[in-house]
Amino acid sequence: MGTALVTGASRGIGRAIALRLAGDGYDVIAVARSQDELDSLCAEITKSGRKCRALALDITDAAAVSRALRNESVDVLVNNAGVGIIKPFAEMSLDEWNTMLDVNVNALYHVTHALLPRMLERGSGHVCTIGSISGRSAYVGGAAYSGTKAFVTAWAESLMLEVRGRGVKVSVVAPGGVATEFSGHTVTDADLWKLAAEDVAGAVAQVIATPPDVLIHRMEVRTLTPPPSKSAK
Ligand code: NJP
Image 1: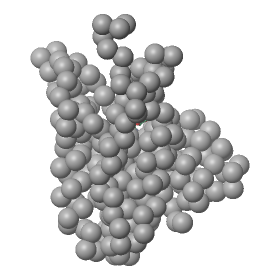
Image 2: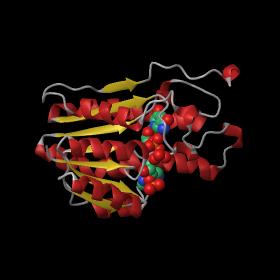
Image 3: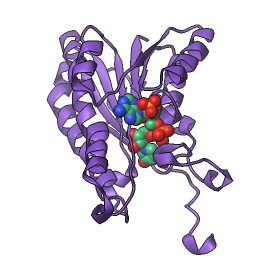
């Protein structure tokens, strides 16, 4: 199947994607800042018979990303790492704003720009980025986060048009609410209505597994369960 590099693989959706793609036969390069969590993920994948390499990396550090990925050639890149500082724009500090832009937007440049050239040379590859239904659905506190996820949609569609003729696929998987520790959240029974990280991993696996000349460019994933209304709480 080849090699898949997954960013944000230390926990949550990225960890589930790494495990799922390993289960589907990919060797994995697992990227995030938390070495211990990456090591434990790789131990789990190795035990199941596939290769896994932990790459502890801050993907907002352009020079470090370029150094680390310069010689890597991967078949699949999953841009999953993301942060969500959810608060009204007027209360958002410049540091918070910059963090959101650095991880959710600028790191797409650093990581994708480092790996895309080899895909283009080879004439094959898949860049799959985790977006969000927030990218097209406004809500209070979402000005910055929704903005970054709207960027993902627009960036990925243009990139897809630029590279599909050269054998490289570009996709966005946009979930609704997922029960993870995203944005400092603690998962409790109140999150049971949400998607599981494994549901999103399944969607990514499906998007990647299409026949050579077929591309699922955008997939939105939701549960059948509506979120509990505020009045019901
Ligand atoms: O989030 P979380 P999710 N350099 O916080 C990594 C989107 N999404 O799995 O560096 C490198 O559990 C961080 O690793 P570490 C969301 O926008 C979610 O829920 O070790 N890595 C960790 O592995 C995001 O794009 C929901 O701290 C960095 C990972 O990112 C994706 O799904 C709904 C990093 C974050 O894990 C995964 O989110 C939706 C850096 N500088 C879209 N900064 C949802 N959960 O409800 C962070 O629509 N990471």
